Structure formats: C-alpha cells, structure tokens
Length: 173
Image (cartoon, rainbow, N blue to C red; front, side, top):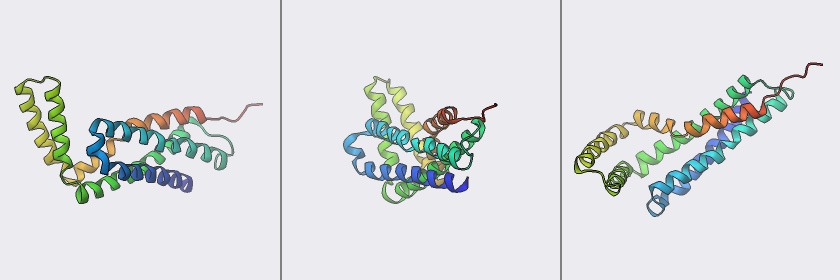
C-alpha cells in the first residue's frame, strides 16, 4: 500500500505544484478570481489521481476487491501527500518569491468590497481584518495550516466519490 499511496500522492502533488508554479507569474494578468478558479480546476484534475490510485490498490493489493473504508483510507492518504507537496511549494514560493502577495490579496479583498458597495465603516473593518490576516499569514506555521486547508474542499469529496465508485466486495456464491 505504501508504494501505491506514495506514487499516486507524489504524482498528484507534482501536478498541483507544477500548475501553481506555472500560473503564479500570470496572477496579475489573469486576476485573483480567475486565478482561484484555475487553481481549484487544477486541484480537481490532480485529485483524479486519487481515483486511479484506489483502483490500482484494489487491483494489485486487494486482488480485485476493496471495502469502502479501505478505499477511502487510500484516497485520503494520497490526497494528504499531494496536499503536503502543495503546501511545501507554496511556502517556498510565498516566502522567497512573493513577499507582497499578502498585500496584493488584501487590496483585492478591499477593492471587491468597495465594488460591491460596502459602506465606509465596512471597508474600514475589512481593512483592519486584512491587516490582521497579513500579520498572521506571514507566520510560516499559520501560512502552512491555512494553505493545507485550501485543497480539502476538493480532495475530500474526490476521495469519497472514488471510494464509493470503486468499492468492490467478494461475491457470495
């Protein structure tokens, strides 16, 4: 199981990291909204490897059978490995190449609130929240924890769906 989980987790993580590295230079041109859509689309594609990893495990280690629980466990392990690769890549990029990302993100959030017609009090509150966010986000542990949460809304459902589709019990004759 270790070899299958590591192989598919690292391939998925490499895809997540490669797409992040490929899109970051263009984030100012494509915008934050499109960047997020592109990022989550990439996560869906990378987490398709969860399906193939579970299937490979079922066919090799499980002799063609796998319970939902075991399939979910394999899928979640693959997802966690991929997510760790994603976090490590972001930590390197953020702290070495994008030290102004927090400021740009804060400006984006405040401008979005302004464009939505927020009151001056609301914009002032939002500005203060973004200052606090930037301070916390500059802490590597907080940054890593926050970044680890990003792929979970995609990875967990992909693991659940894959486990449900691929579960296969022994036939009772």
